Image (spheres, rainbow, N blue to C red):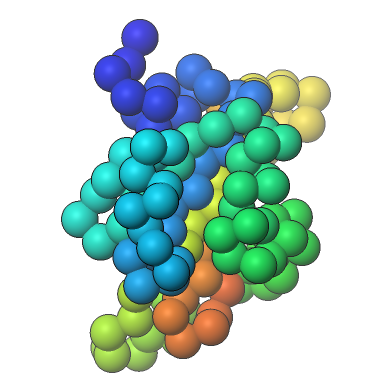
Length: 143
């Protein structure tokens, strides 16, 4: 068993939860959220039950998480394995920072095939401070 909720989520031990990262400048008062998540260098990562997590993400960002995920699937790029940021596909060498990341896990499903047959899969979606949305998915333990 891992030490933190985030580590457990990333290890595939919390498939019923969602995780999201909020950059410090993406919300009005990050201090109000500190009791709910893990403070990181430039923001906070929160891991919470799926329905509550989707509602909390929407309250914090003003975006429907599943609508946001659908939009972000249009552009693939790298999202940090720790969920604290990513590489904006519009970056072209300039500094682009993730405003937020939303992620959920899907348990291994050999019938579906592809990467889903290889293990639990993390689906992650990010929005850059430039407004670009992008996504990445990976098999737990392969990053």
